Amino acid sequence: MSITRDDIIDFIYAEARMLDEGRYSEWLDLWLEDGHYWMPLDYKQADPHLVTSLLYEDNFMLRLRVERLNGERTFSQKPKSRCHHVIQRPFVDEFDVEAGHFVTNTSMHYVETRLDEQFLLALTATHELKLVDGRLRIANKRVDLLNSDAAFGNIQLLP
Amino acid sequence: MGKYSDNPAAVAALVQPHQVHKDTYIDAEIYQLEMRHLFSNTWVFVGHDSQTPTKGDYFTTQVGDQPVIMVRHSDNEIHVLYNRCPHKGTKIAIDRSGNTGKFFRCPYHAWSFKTNGCLLAIPLKKGYAQTEFNDSESAKGMQPVGAVHNHRGFVFARLAVEGISFEAFFGDSLSSLDNMVDRSPEGRLEVAGPPLRYMHQCNWKMLVDNQTDTCHPMVAHESSAGTAVKLFDAANWPEDKPKPVAMEIIAPFMSPYEFFEDMGIRTWPNGHGHTGVHHSIHSDYSAIPGYHDAMNETYGAEKAAEILGENRHNTVYFPNIMIKGPIQQLRNFIPMGPDKTLVESYIYRLVGAPDQLLARTAMYNRMINAPTSIVGHDDLEMYERAQEGLHSQGSDWINIQRLYEGEEDMSVEAVENGTTERQMRNQFDAWSRFMTMSMPNSEAAE
Image (cartoon, rainbow over all chains, first blue to last red; front, side, top):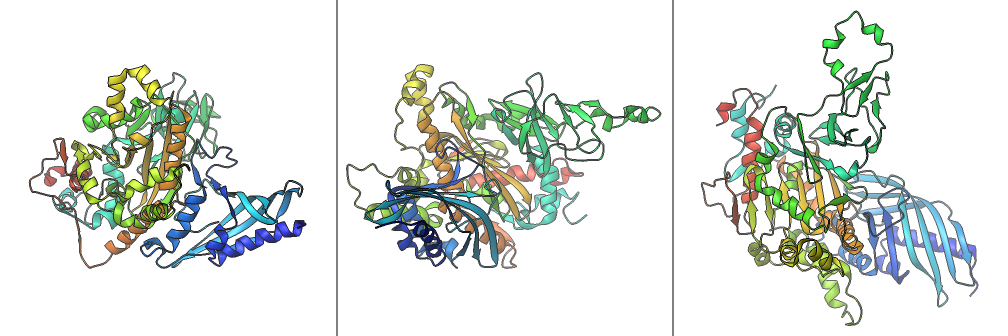
């Protein structure tokens, strides 16, 4: 299969749509087993291990997060939250077809709502994608919130 | 002026041995009185001295609702100053931290101050020559808080000039802080990065109460910890594959009531107390290579085993912090209004210990205390529902009667069944005393 830049960009749009539509199992299947979803706490944070992050989750934690959203006794999701990503056309920063390795940089506005509350986050997502068995997968994803150092209430879904 | 100002008897009447009035959590006047009295008369956490390691380093925060600057002066002493220019009131420092060099300079009229607060210079000083400026309050410079104490790196302030001493206020409760520091092979901690900041639409006491509430984890956290256990059990995890590290942290939240009953609660006078006297949810963490050896080398095997044998769960330092010794963490519950609290969760590096230990600490913090944490979501949902519910006319009282046997003496240390609400009663005993002690007619509260 020959991969084009448009394929990479479409992938990023499709992922955001899956999250907005709550198609979480499909979304989990986009991930490679050893990938991490990282949301730093500090502006330009370099290290996910020895300082605190907002999120640094492996596959088990992401599955747990998704499983919990549908749980019978998930009281903070009664009623459920909804989210909405508005994304700018991704930059394809690395495009190595030979190695099947791609890196994108995408600006987004993320809105999450529950009951009468709604909040907006501005963020930059960096995706590291790999081509495995002819299919694009997420190897790692990093989400830098513009105001990562602000005090938030609950952020319950996935920016 | 409302029904509680200058009325210590009315304030004291809000606290009964087995129940407290909802006004303690929702009334705006009570909140103002807490800021003026409770947070002035007690010793309140400011920061850790590793946040200001070199001369001129400063850190801005709040003691109650008072903006303060913690700063390291040229003689290496830590000072805590009100963050207010003595001229027109302008806040001097706006960054959360930084280095100010040899002096602070107000951005409005360039009045400058030494890092111990003393007035250094005023432009066009001759304009004050014919006045009695030198006798004014402004001439003294930036006002220091009433008293400051640095206990093994942890800096506390008492706003009131006169009052209870640091030692008398904390007494034997300092054993929890000491244990956390002793866990470093060099007997020293360092802050590791900025704190998580998490805004809660509820009263600050909701959070403090929850630190020793051992009857909620298996209920409120069923959705997070319970789901984790279920997911792991269903995964038929292969023997040769390393277990998810997260499981070690999150699974103990689902321990049964008996586990929490047996672990015990200890209370100390003045509102301090801790869960996990005999064991805790932190007891069964796996050993980190090299750490025990480093501890044995410093302390000798016996003393090292004693230090690491303490697995205190949550220690509340009244009024508004909680520490977790075994995971090197401190949470500061900063009041922002009767219905609003900022939670800052700090982690510390054990100086001289392997990085792997700090990595576990950082993982704990993001998994449990972040605004993005599924465990945090469980708790915040409950606090906010409680805060809303307390505004109802359904009842005026909050029950804190669990394992109350009547006639408790809060002036002594006690160890009890881990599901008692004695520590909450202990906090309110202290609340009532420190709220009323500096009110006019305070003997009326006796």
